[in-house]
Amino acid sequence: MKRNYPKIKKAVIPAAGFGTRFLPQTKAMPKEMLPIVDKPVIQYVVEEIVASGITDIVMITGWHKRSIEDHFDYPFELEKRLEEAGKEKELAEVRRIADMANFIYVRQKGPYGNATPVLCAKNVIGNEPFAVLWGDEFIYAHPPRLKQMIDVYEEYGKPVISGVRIKDKKDLSRYGIAKIKPVKDNVYEVQDIVEKPDPDHAPSNLAAHGAYILPPEIFPIIENLKPGRGGELWLPEAIEQLLKIEKVLVCEIKNGRYFDTGNQLEYLKTVITLALEHPGLNGELKKYLKGLKL
Picture 1: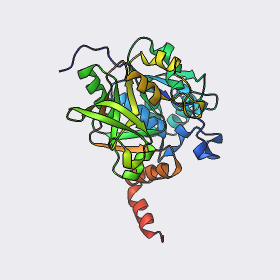
Picture 2: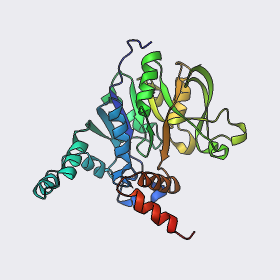
Picture 3: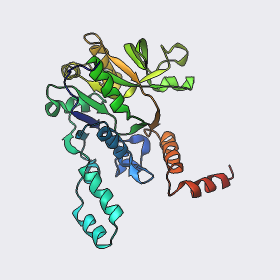
C-alpha cells in the first residue's frame, strides 16, 4: 500500500567528469554526448527520468560541458532552417528535446569523486528526497527503471537503489555488490555493499548502482565524509554511512536491459545493439555485420 511520503520531484544527473577512458575523443566532447545511433547518451537518461514522471532535472556540469546545455536548449537558427526546408519531423524532434523537462545547471565545485556532484545539488534540492542517475549509463525497462524505484519508495518511504543481476561471475568485480535480505518480490533490504569484490567472495550477484532515490540526510553525510580511494569522495561510502541511520532498499529492475557506456567496449556494444533495433538501420547493418570476415 502506498503511503503519503514526500514526492520525488527532482532528479540529479552528475555530468562533470572528464571521460578520460575515451580520450582523445572527449578532449572536446563530453562523454555524456557520445552518440548512440542518433541520440547522445545523456538524452536516454533524461528520457527515462521524464517517462518516470519527473520534469525538474538538475545537471551537475563543468566548464567543458557546455554542449550538454546547448543540446537541451532552444536552437532558434536550426529551427528556422528546418522550418524553411520543410523538415517537419526533424523540427518536431529538436523542439521536443527542449520541451522535455525544466533543466537546471550547476557547476561542480569540490574534490573529485562521484559523491561531490550529489552534494553540489544540495541548494537546489533542499529538504526533500530526490533521484540520482549517472549520465553515462542507462537501462531500457518497461516500466522505466526510475518509475519502478519510485513505486518502491512510495510503498516503503525508504532510500532505494536500482539493482541489476550480474550473469557472468567474473564481472562481479566491476560493481558494488549488495548483501541483501528479501523484503517482497523484487525488493530487498541492503545489509552491506561490497565494492568490486573478489567474484569468489561476493555476497550476491546483485549489483546495486546506477540510480538512487536518496533522502536529504545524505548531504550532511557527504559533507562530513573523509576522502576514500584516490583521495576522492565516493557515493557508495556515503551510503554505507546512511545504512547506519536508515534502512536502504534495492529494487531489482524488472524487464530491463542495462547499457553501460562508461568504457570503450561497452559503449560499442551499446551502439551496435541499439543500431540493430533501429528501424531505419537494422536491415542493412545486419547484412554488413554478417558479411564481415572476422
